[in-house]
Image (cartoon, rainbow, N blue to C red; front, top):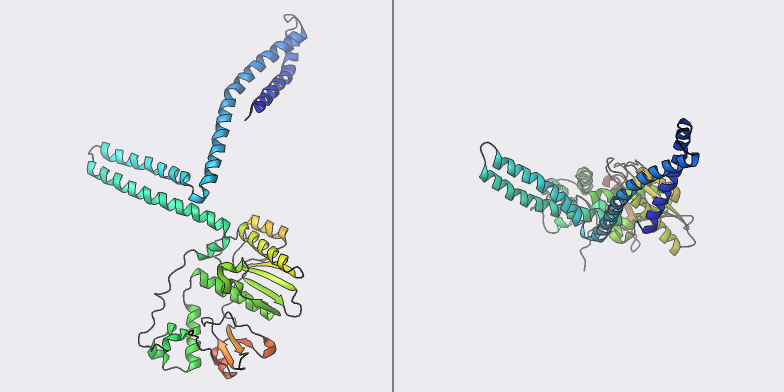
Length: 394
């Protein structure tokens, strides 16, 4: 608060007092007219007294108001500087709160009827270690929140579980057999009893039943939405899967076959229904769609959002204003035909790919070439397709 602000408050308080004095002075004048010398004297006396009292209150309160505002401004500056460091001041305040509680517990052990001095010392030491751990945890938490705000897609990488324990490949397999991902899903004694189509179908069934981490589930959801667009006559690029962090928030780029200038930029989020999509995700999609349009000026670009959960209220408002088409609570059908039957450009060989095969996401299905999606490996082999070999480099 500047000096001019203080003057404004003082002048406004004086004018308010004059108005108040007019309302108060007039009835006083008529009630006590014989004893009061004049009307204007009454007004002046009342105004003076009220103004004096009001200014006393203002004079006392202004320094406190100014001090509080100054403290608020300083705190905002501190938080602004500390953002990249994980807000240590907030973490310290959290730590101080629990310090007081620990001191209270320590004193209660020392001062009770039968003092527990040794226990109090143990509590003090353990509490100190716990607070240090909590302080570090808070710093990391605040840093993560800042990162999630700047890069919304990072939320998908929370709670990624290691997969090594899930894939305990039977040691009885030969090194060559281990190159087939189908061996991840069954012991060798079971594998050797089955035909190629049977073992591949069994592996596919167990692939769908297996517990998956967030990244895998998100990738499968992108494939499913991409499949739906392919069936609607679009050529789909699976940029989110193939390019990872470099996809610029474009999980799928779908181009209409009969008109390549009609482009849909799609972002997919397979989330729990208990988590909402926030405005940062909507802004990211709008930004990346705009950037695509800037580089492809002749294209008619439509941003579209698919999610298994809901948007929060602000995200909904933004999506409407920015012209983003949103499909909320959009489920995934795990029974969709996911086996890709492809015809090789090199030698016209007919090959099918399973979701866990190397070239699955690079393989495009072109119906004009008699390529298609089917539900089972048995169906693919009946049509003359064989399972894709694994590429080992070189």
